[in-house]
Length: 459
Image (tube, rainbow, N blue to C red; front, side, top):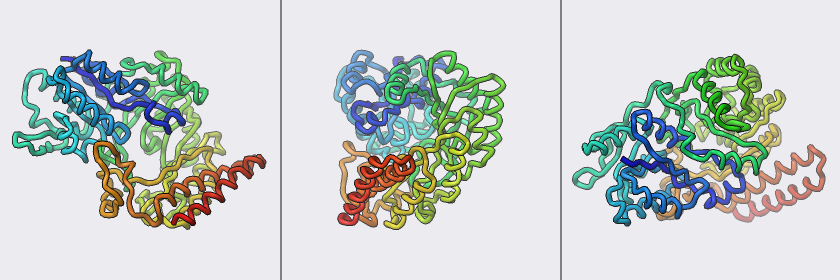
């Protein structure tokens, strides 16, 4: 049986990512690949990140796989739908079973099945994918496999019961990184940032309830690999690749302080040193935690904020104190760790006063780096349910994503685009003033004032 795993993301189609240039390998399908091999099913991985859609199609035509499994999320959805159509329209691929997984499929099951998928994997993918492959290989029915969705004999969508999550993550083999050309990622990072990076996962799920965040794959759960196993992986990486830094892709890296102490001890006992960055929450940080991060090699910590207004944070159900966020950003910097943060504008109920409170938040905490976006609702989240009745236009599902959805907000959509410009330029002017770069200060301040005027005019 010939099995191909792919994901349909092409960096050349993404101008924003080309500008940022922080691509990471598709860890999800690399874990699935390793799991299949653990149980005797060889497979190929077509990593599309640095490839093209035409090359992906050509490879499928050459390989003529019995099973094509495609990871699907917001960024890949449109290409996945096009890929389904390509396979279904090609007679030489009529035997190919199409399996979709990832966070996008659960809440659009009928549409993906109508688009050509044979079966959808809902939730965690390894065990369900293995059972599907085993059934296809043996010619058995897949109708009753846990964690799947498919059409029944009457053409109606059948959602089978969820599969229990893998309780012990130590059962997972390391992701099958040797299936793809990681050097492409290292080179892209090196050229843009001066250092290369590799992604590592230590946990699955998130125990927090932010209304805008999708939990379509892992639900409201938290499971973690042992500190020893993560250290083993770091040691393997350093013995296999020449890479400068790591990115821990966990939602809340410091959620468990006992684990963090064990991780730090494990690294010290082996004299392992790999500089890394991670994401966490301010309420799971203390001075001890920051010291542990620093000692274990953390050079940058991303501390979620989303807004500088406590009122908006409470609307999001973030369950964090904005002053705590500011304090932890400042303390991390004092301890020699760069601090990054995330900002979102346009959340339902946000006012102009809240936006300017966010500006104050960024100036008072002065993170080394921040990202900013206009809020959008992801299907299946509480935010989506809250604003669904207020969507402002109909979209073609096959050619759009949830990022394209707009809804009735406090102000016009253009207002928030200008608000993003205002925040970025006002904060940059503040940073320039601190470093006494007066030309840059005037440049950014002028842009900030212009954006503020545009905000008022576009309300």
